[in-house]
Length: 179
Image 1: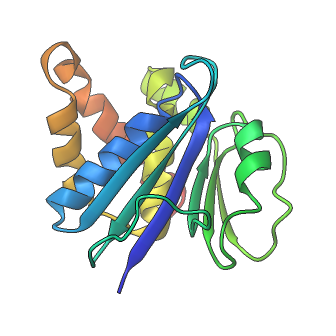
Image 2 (image 1 turned 180 degrees about the horizontal axis):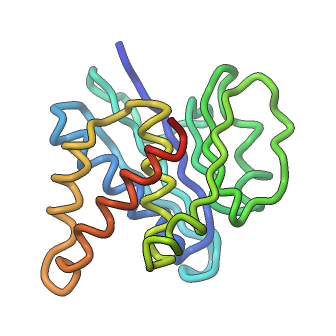
């Protein structure tokens, strides 16, 4: 059985919740069981935000986990808060554009990605979250790129439809950067 227990954490406004929503929706498109549980700090934009995503081949008992096996870190407070919780042999993806601190863990696999620089090269810093998502997907294989593409198509509609290709490209660049 494959079960991915992921916490995505950062500041409000970094697209933390969107990463979680895209993963959960992509998992559904991949015919997996998924949950997405958001958690906000006192303020949304600029405050702390995290979400828990579970993607599993089997039915999910609870959307809550105190021991994730995967972690995406978008800021230093999130690294400090969550690095102790990740299970040994888990995976941590760190956006080194914002997090200039090393993890204290040596029993997990760490993927470092300069997501902001890659996003800037693509012409829009706001897709740094999708770059990080791509790095995570390349390392874990939690969901397929086709599932992510469908999830982005479902999420980016109306005024945001023009951002679809850029977001897909950002995910692909994130994947390439950690190959």
